[in-house]
Length: 61
Image 1: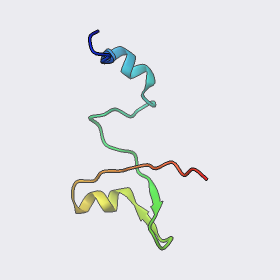
Image 2 (image 1 turned 90 degrees about the vertical axis):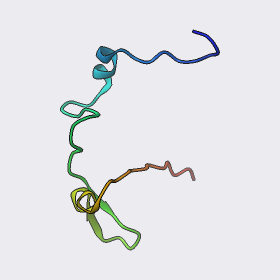
Image 3 (image 1 turned 45 degrees about the horizontal axis):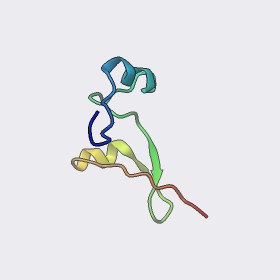
Image 4 (image 1 turned 60 degrees about the horizontal axis):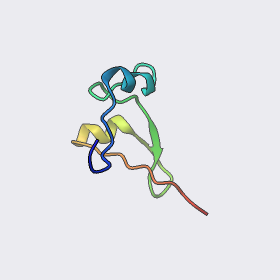
């Protein structure tokens, strides 16, 4: 490998690390989150409005 680039994992390697029943091209599992005011929000309800991106931030401190 040149320039310190990491090799892409093979399909088999990627499948070994994926949770059971979840893949990149399949539907996301249903999940419930809390909005900024603490009210429950369902993932499917957000998705029904249009494309969705989830971002997880790690709280340090």
